[in-house]
Image (cartoon, rainbow, N blue to C red):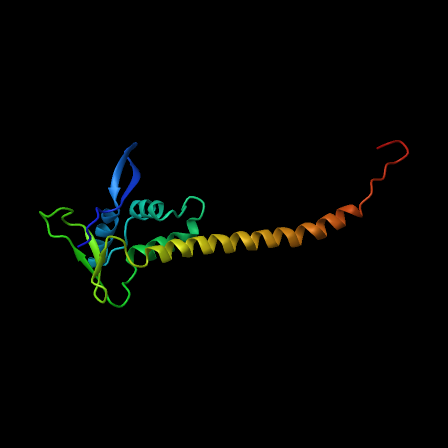
Length: 154
């Protein structure tokens, strides 16, 4: 099992801040997978915060958070749980057989973070391009307009 303590995340609970381990998310997601249930919305929102995915602004990206929670492991990796009674008992960790390395963090976690950043960058670039291509013709057309006033100034 990994030597470091499990990463912590701060999430609001009942109006007060409470430290929640990333393993709380992973453990609950694992239980959902085992029972063929989708993780509850509060779990997705909390995990999104941990991944630094803003679901308030980008609600259409909840699929990415769900994917991160249930992502399969790459070849050579396996998922384990620390035995109850041991330090971090019940915590989920990941083991990489070829390197004999273990980690608290899912091997694809950073990939999901980078995917989010890439999507946001792409959306921002597309929006910027749309604004730029629309603004110039609009400015040109507006420049051709003139104001006409009747003799009685109405």
